[in-house]
Length: 432
Image 1 (cartoon, one colour):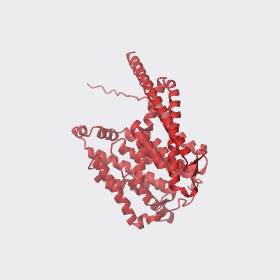
Image 2 (cartoon, rainbow, N blue to C red):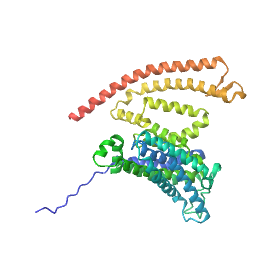
Image 3 (tube, rainbow, N blue to C red):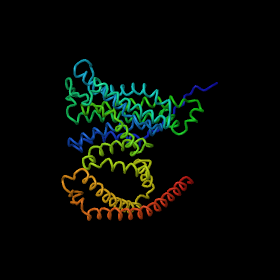
């Protein structure tokens, strides 16, 4: 006879994961209390929206290996439908609270992804990328041709303060909008992380790594891509809806290829192969778009150079650099590298100062020639028409580059020795 005794298995609680998510929630809560200025709260709000958008894009790029050039279509359409819903709610024709308007954007992004994703995901690799690029340009052009929907060049504006306040919340102050974005950011981040632990998420990784093997065991790679495409469109639409509430205006720029390019660039810079990489990328996206663009007119040139060097020397993004050093720190070897890091930072800063001085002088001569040859750079006055300023900038650049190369060679040798010591320590622990 078979025994009727039931066996119960208890999975140990993952304390580390609870701590990480708790710290993430705590950071979202205390951030506007640490940075209380209007600019800081606006930037924090944009960062929360950017986190959702970049994580949704990473479902395609990092988890599925699908290079998309049209992801702004889904966040942009979500923004348009959300702001139309907000206007209808304000007019009394739609009984919807402001806090649920982003879900309208999410459903809009989902519906558009259902339609366009069916076409896009029929192909993979380069054909997929070209299809998304074409669809992105098509939707952007179509939006300008339908001013009743897009508002033309002026866009569609709205007012997020509608109806009676609920517990004093009107979403008029920026801090209230931030906390709405923070709640959506936390929930969406948790949901997208949970996706990576589902069978669909695992299969999406398999489609990225070995699609032939996936087809061999009986799964349709096209349907795996299509389902993940729809999920990515839903979360992108939520980001677009939150953006509509934050800015209270939506125009054709939300559908432009430049925004899709920004999602791609900063997701890669943050680290597309790591879940938290796009979070770093979203923070960098806002910092570059708000602060760096105010400091210099050549910010896109600097951003392009950073992207170039990251592709060449750190293709895993900032997340990979962080994890590599955390691994070294876990074995107690990081203290051996701090002098090398200081030397790399100092020589790299010299290279940056020399190159930036030349770039700024070129921009000054091209764009501000009417103001005279003198310009201010890092607290110093430079004569862009004089030989001394150019000679000094070139000298600082060359000396910094030479020192950086010497330090880099020493660092590479030191890093290799530390990695060998770590491997030996791992084998020793395994033998015990």
